[in-house]
Image 1: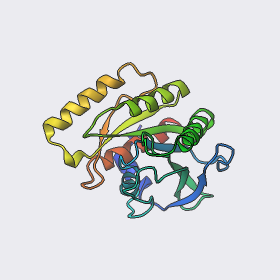
Image 2: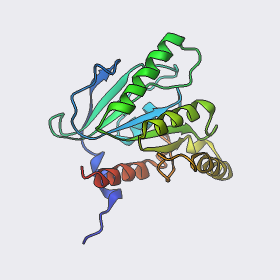
Image 3: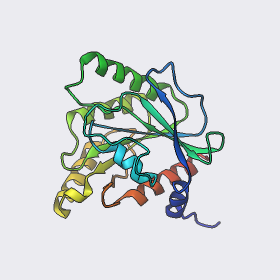
Image 4: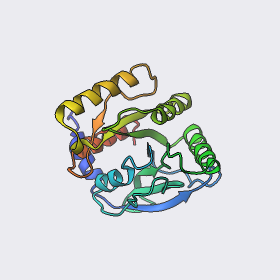
Length: 217
């Protein structure tokens, strides 16, 4: 049996068209089920939009903003020739942990995320972005708790690789591994990325390609 080159598979997967096609502000208003979905979660301003742009080789697939809390809904992107021939859906989730946002809005976002995570059969994995400069914070712990409770597979992606020294990167990776050790739904591999330098982007594409193979998509 020929061994699959998932690095190349990942490159080819994300070399194709990728377009925004749906936004959901309520769990009652989700797009019709289709291709497998991977979602991206993280604290406000952790760099989700920049990572999505780097992952898909685009400059403005997802809007990059310096204003925390800008993403206020689930944004769906179809990866493939078109929405009728999609290989994968990318889901940009609202950022969490931004205290300046009103309590009512936070409650609405939290309900939307909980309902989506617990009730979406097409969701294959959540990639949780954590700022490599700060490591796992209480707001991140709360998201990881929710994912464990929802029995959703997730993988941690550290960001800001280019802003740390090698020694600092080693420390945050070790601390993150320790934080995930007893979490049942956590995928054991951590990927350290930089949307600026491109570090880790190929590895993330490879991870997604391997995931699709594992679920038979």
